[in-house]
Image 1 (cartoon, each protein chain N blue to C red):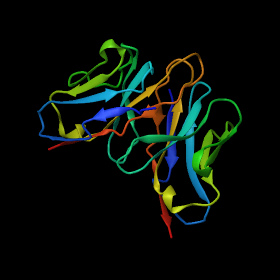
Image 2 (image 1 turned 120 degrees about the vertical axis):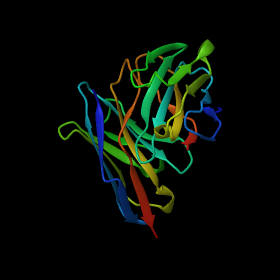
Image 3 (image 1 turned 180 degrees about the horizontal axis):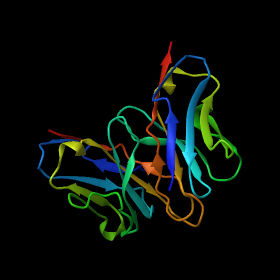
Image 4 (image 1 turned 90 degrees about the vertical axis):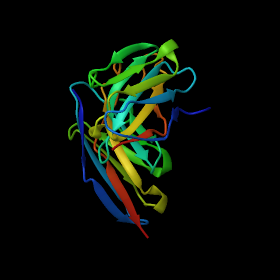
Length: 116
Length: 114
C-alpha cells in the first residue's frame, strides 16, 4: 500500500513570496489533515478535511494560508505572502474515518519550508 | 479542550537501559492517547495507541505505555534501549469520536549512548 505522498520535500523562498505544497493521501482515506511543525515543537493542526469539506480550520491563518481538496482526493496548501515565522515542516496525514472507532492517521514525509 | 505535556525535551540513556518518556494529558472528555516516533527527515510513525480498551498498551519495537486516569498520564517505556531507538517521540491526544485531529506535545528527543 502506497503511503501519503507530499511534494516538494524542500522549499526555500524569500519573505513575501508565495508557495504551494501538494499532498496525495492513501487511496480510500476520507479524512486529510495538514499540520505545521515548527522546529523544536510538536505538530499543530492547520486544517482538517472530510472528503472535500472542511471540518476544522480554526487554527489556519486565513489572511495568508489557504487550502483546498478538490474532488476529495489530493490537497494543496498555499501560503501567500510568506513570513519568516512560516519556516517549518508541513505535514500531511490521512485516515479512513470509517465508523465510530478511531482510525490511525498516516503521515507523509513532510515539506520543509525555509523563508529567508 | 485537550493538551499534552511532555516532561523533558531531551532524555539520554545507555544502550540496554530502561527508557521512560513522560506524558501527561488534559482532556474534558475520555481521551484517545498516542505515541508517535519521528526519525530525522521523516514523517511520524505510530508507536502505539490507547482507545479505551486495555490500559496497558503494547506497541511496535518493544515499546509499551500505561494509561493512568488518576494521574492523567500515559508514559512510554521500553525495558532495554537500542541504538536504533534514537529519535524524537511525540505524545498526542484526541477527543475520540467526532473530531479526530491530534493535539501533540512538544516532543522528547531520545539519545542512546553506546
